[in-house]
Length: 432
Image (cartoon, helix red, strand yellow):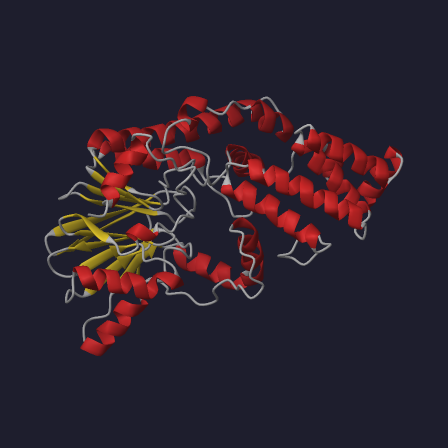
């Protein structure tokens, strides 16, 4: 008999399986692709993100609806579970494209069977983010090619979206059948996040406020995140004493004590980083000190649900700085800088030429000091963009560094640079 997703989650919790091997965001988990009922009346499906369908006794209510690629398999999975119950409502946890596209099959079905079209619920800011996506489609195409190692030149960010029908600001309570659906707003990964609690069942759906990893609170290419408010939302969830939690990415979890530990440990992690950054900022510090003096709580990183397999803790420090201090890093030469190529040419000339720079970069790489090796080889390639020997070394250094990375964001962005130098460029997504 196939292993259930709850049994698999137990093994993750107990350390028998690691998110280092089964990535909570990227892993497709084909063995669980069919979806399954994890409690009476609760269907769980994992695409890139988790899709949860609840039988209210008077129609189905879905929390998060998946990607465009999930539309048909999600529809088929739900229909194997509940063949004739209409989807009456769907809730978006936030505006990201792995959570918002799965209602299409159910809406087509409603038209065909003359059922009432499902209503989509979301926070009031979701529509504005869809508008932003349409304005920045090329930008989002480029940054996601880097972040997710998408090496397909024809990849395009979506240009059309299913906008919500019903929106709210702080809290909305929706009743259907035998159940109550309590929608709560909390800023975290996004400023439009919704988390859902079903009090009759003690079911919690935190969306991407929980992803079985270091929270996605830093992402270097994306808009602002909110660590302190994120932590506050997690503590609000813990106070409700949920018995089942289905995370936005990753795996469902049962048992009040385990859920409480995951929520409060994650809150403590975020609070620790924010408090340390603010302490340094309040001394008038520069960003460099923040990045290299804040202590990342290792005892929390060692938890099976807080490994830094997606976001990197140092990225989070930058986002906290940006929220409270803006973009300026308190380095006066960066206030109105010279073009980077001019800087690079000057440094390479001072070093005695590109060969000496490349030689030292190679030495640093061989010694395992990839941070400094990257700095030097980058200066060489910027100063001499047509130098094939510089690109060959850049490929080798960035690829070696990416292979050591635990964070998939770090790994994919670094490997993107390596792939670009194989084609004589610094970046493929932007073509430069």
